[in-house]
Image (cartoon, rainbow, N blue to C red):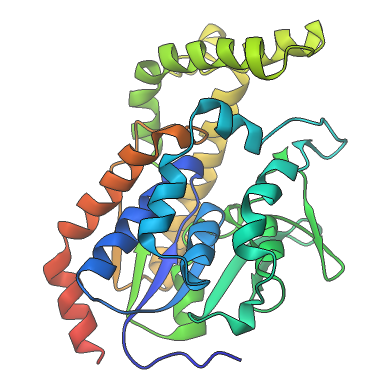
Amino acid sequence: MNRVKDRGLVLALGGGGARGLAHIGVIEVLVREKIPIRAIVGTSIGAEIGAFFAAGISSKKMRELACRMDWISTMRLFTPDFSDLGVSTGKGIREYLTPYMADKQIEDLPTPFAAIATDLSTGEQVVIRKGNLLDAVRASISYPGLLTPFQKDGRTLIDGGMVNPVPFDSARTLFGGPVLAVQVHPKVELHVAHREKEAPEWDNRLKELLADAWPNMPPHLIKWFKGFKRKRLFPFHKESSLGVSSIMNQSQLIIQDMIMRLRMHISPPDLLLKPDISEIGSLEFYRAEDAILAGKAAVEAQLETIFQLHTTFI
């Protein structure tokens, strides 16, 4: 079993889809400034990025992998096979992560790590601290409706963001402080403000996807996916302003906002970073460079405080 080192920060990395690539930028700056990371707890994309680092993958390599993704590569991660339990079984994601995680056990990682998932049956938070690393990540990223739930240890697990969007309280419970938390889901009002700006590019990408990636998709599914496009969200009382994705995204943000406020009141982190990722869509993994730069900027703006936290806990 890992023994947590005495020095360094405990990172709590939140969920937010492609926005979570900002975590790479956060880690880059901490590594550059020689600020030790002694443990990581991650939810969803935060679990994935955290798992890469905990397994010994350098921040440089993570950046390289992320910035390689274009639109088509991104969509191959979520290749739809339309099972009864979700749009995708996650086969593409598993193939992508296999070279880096499939042969790793959490308890053997050089940096202590935990992934957060949600028990679909009970609604309980599930903290995964042992077993196969790839399985832990796959469970934590199982966003309902998009990726099928993951079966582990007799439990049906879904995305950890359903119960703990930024797991700073779990990080402190597991590994102590100082806890540096990173929130990569936008505030509800910011999500509304930027949605109209994102729509044209999303429409273009969707047309490319339907034409090139899934040419044999049945007509009724093509019609459904066209209706899935991001529509202008405001004002909400007008039905014409809504789309399937806008309803799903906005509902999730409302839930996350409530959970965050409650957990911040009970057990706040020592520092919470909020990279400016509001203009990046949750599936826009091809915008890795933008997300990484946002993560770097958020850390650099708080470097003095982070140094103080680190030295205070030595």
